[in-house]
Length: 137
Ligand code: DAT
Ligand code: MG
Image (tube, rainbow, N blue to C red; front, top):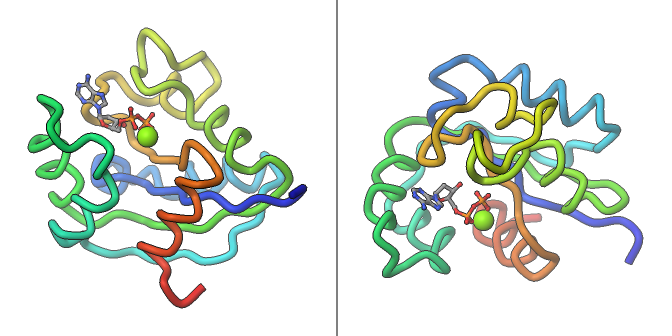
C-alpha cells in the first residue's frame, strides 16, 4: 500500500498555546494531505479507547486527565508513508531526550506529558484510531 492515512491530534496544550496553525502548516509543508479535520472536546471513554495500549501504566490516569482537559484538533492525514512521515515531523515522545531539533516536539515542547501532538504508530493503529475518531470515513 503506497498511500497511507494516519490520525493526527493537536492535544489540549497545543490548542491552548495557539499552535494549531503551526501544526497545520507543518502538515502542509511536508506535503501531506488533510482528509478530515475537527475541533472537539474528548469524552473520557474515547480517550481511554484511544490510549488503551497504555491502560495500567503509571501515567495512564494523568494521560486521560490531560487529553480530556480541553479541545483537541483531530485530523486524518494522508500521503505516501504518511504514518512514518508524520511521526518524523512530530518528533520522539520525550521532547528533550528523543525529539530531534526541527520536529514539532523538539522545537516547541518541553515535557513528555504535554508533547503537543499525536500520530498513529503503525498501519494497524492508524486504522483503529481513524475508525474511533472518524467512524464515518
Ligand atoms: P507517542 O505519543 O509518541 O506515540 P506513546 O504512545 O508511548 O507516545 O505515549 C502516549 C502519550 O503518553 C505520550 O505522547 C505522552 C504520554 N506518555 C508516554 N510515556 C510517558 C511517561 N513515561 N510519562 C508520562 N507520560 C507519558
Ligand atoms: Mg503512541
